[in-house]
Every structure is written in structure tokens, then in C-alpha cells.
Length: 481
Image (tube, rainbow, N blue to C red; front, side, top):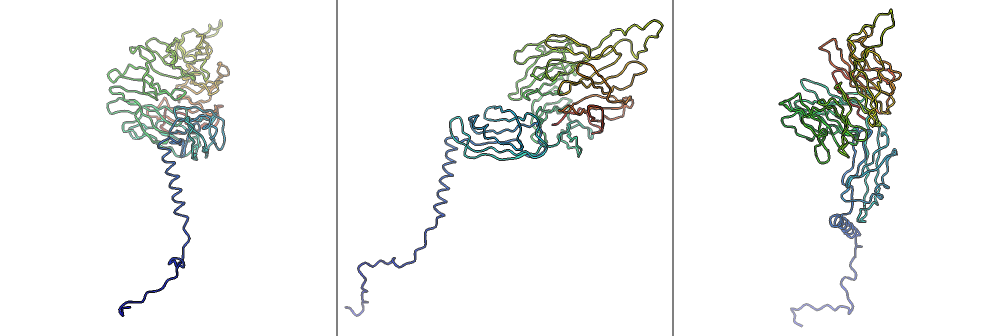
């Protein structure tokens, strides 16, 4: 051995250098993370490649929701209807009906949601029409606000839409149009408004806005025209309105816009006719006044057919809730009954011209005089929701009963048991609105003897009790469920 070499160490034949080292147990987390990552990747890939169904949007959410608001779920693909509807849970439960529009399911309550919180749960397990499963459900809630009224109120120089609960509380401004709002309509489910937004040239365009003031969108631009007086169809699919050319503000044409595709319909078929005061029947037919022909025209969208009812009063009137009748004021010149010999003739404020309420059966044109033989001026009839009563304005024309303003009256739908609910001789009462349960009537009144007076919105029980003022300066009230 070289004196400079180190001695070689001798090792056992089966020696393993790692045999006696400490070995830490393997951590399970990397494996779990890997598994979860793979599962998520598979789900994402399945959703992207194979279109696994999921809820893309749900409604309603938040607070102050309409008591008639439907529950909707929009899916990202076509779904198996039965598997979806069977998995919807609502607390408190309520009967209702399902309907579908494309990939959106809609559940409409049979009545009204109760005031307070409504919780909705959609359970997983539904499947698409291709048989792919829905892995996740959806849970949300919304708060139903107290019923109220929507109305126009002028602040400064412009009018805008405001709402206020009938139970009290502060009013809320909904629109903020620079040149003001000309008219408003509440959708049948109470979730949105369509209104006429004024322009600086004197015209007006139609716009939409959600009940809470969000989501303002243009519905119809009307250059060189004033589009106003919107009215929803009962299913909320159409809006009728009046168009006035700025160059001929005395002319007007009733038109109808389809909210789904913007298609316009001209019910009269003759744009030279002056038409106005559109009103939908419960079955979707449209009634309007043809001033040129002095008739109420009725247009059927399904068949395109029209029919006419003579009318010389210039007022459209109201449909009964079953669509069987139209009631409207009509001018009559029938002479008063001949007085008995030796008695003086009754003294009238005007000669022998009266305004009586005429009820016409639409199918047969049979007519009834609901005002009787009295010397009265009746106007503005409105059916109660059940169709059993009519609210209307009346002014007696006999000298000992005459008043400057019309009073609010109520009678049975056949004209019987007519009675006055107000007795304010110097105030005119109009714009009558029933609550959905028929228990309350909202109306506008103003002092006809004072040109500087402002309109007021009032509410009372349908039996005439508990009258209370809701708004000073408000007008055009609409019930807000």
C-alpha cells in the first residue's frame, strides 16, 4: 500500500445506505388537490363541450317586489320541462301555473304573494332535452313590498313617475326625465313601467323602466311625433299607444307595439282616421275610439277582424272583467217625463241633453241604459275586479241638486243601487282605480272653483268609509301590486 493512500472500508454484502434513514409518511393533500382539480376540469369541460345545463339567471331578487311578480329561471340550454317543474320549491307555497318562453321557465302565482320574504329553491337533478344532468341547483329569496300606487307628480317644471305604499311611508321617485313624463302604464305583473318621455321639441318617445327605477331602456323612438298614452295588454306582450304628429297635434293614431320583436300594428287600417283611447279586453282584443267614424272599434289580433259600436260621446269607456260588455257614456237628448197636469215642469241646468252610461253586449250589440231616466251627467265608468260593481262620476243637472264638480258614485253592474260616496260640491272626482280585491278605490279630485288649485290623490273604502288623502299634486294614479 502506498503510504499516501487511505485504507479502503469494508462493507457488508447486503448493505443499503437508505435502510436506516427516517421516512416521512406521504401527505394526502397533493392527491386530493389533484382529484378535485380533475373533477372541476371534467365539469368545466363537460359544460363547455357537452352543454351541461345550468341556471343562467333567476328572478325576482331583492326588495319591494310586486306581489304578482312571476318566478323565472333562464337556462343555458333547452330543458326537459317535467324534470324542471318538479324541482321548484317555494316558501310560503302558493298555487300557480307554469309556462315557458324558449329556455325560460315562468311560474305565475294564482293570487298574490304575501307581503314579506319569499324563499325559492330549485333542486339539482333536472336534465336537458339531450339527457344531460344539472349538477347544481339554485337558492334565492325576494321581499314582497306593500301594495301602493304609481302616479305622476310635478316637481319644479317637470313631471316624473313616483310610487308610494298605501300603508304610508315616503314616496319614491322612479324616473328622472329631463323634460318630464307625459303618461305611464304599469305592466300586469307590476314589475315595470312603460312611459312617454318628453323631448325638448315637444314630442315624446316610449321607454321602459323596472319597478325599482333600474334598467331604463328605449322602447320606441318617435321623431317628429309625440307617442303617449301607453296601455298594456293583459298578458303583458303588447303595448297600445297614441301617436300625434308635431305638425298636426289635433290628429292621433292608435298603434300597437309587440314587446318581443318591436313589430307595429295599425288596428284601424286607415291612417287618415283619428283614433285614440285604447283599452284591451281581458282576452286581448283591443278597443279604441274612432273619432272619425264616431264608433268604438274592436280589433281581434288573432283574426284581424274588426267590429264597431256607435259612440258619439268621445269617451272609450270600460270593458267588463269577463270581456262580455263595454260600458261608456253616451249623449242622449230624450225629453224628460211629461209633468202631471197642474205641476210645474222640473227646472234643468241645461235643456234636455244628458250623459248616460250605456252598457253594450259586444257579441250582440244589445244595449242597456244604466243611468235610468234621471237628468244626470255620468262619466268615467270603471268595473270592479269581480265585475259586480261600477265606479263612475256623476253630476246631477236639476237645479236643486246641481254641483260644480262630479262626485264619485258606485252602483251594481246592472245599474241598480246607485249611491254617492263623496259629497264635495266644489270638487271634481275622476281617474277611479279599484284595488285588486275590490275593497278600495283610489281617485283624483280638484277644486273646480279655484284655477290655482292642485290635484290630489285620495283613497277610500269601496263603501265610502275612511277617505284619506295620499298625495298632493299627484295625478294619473295606477294601482301597484
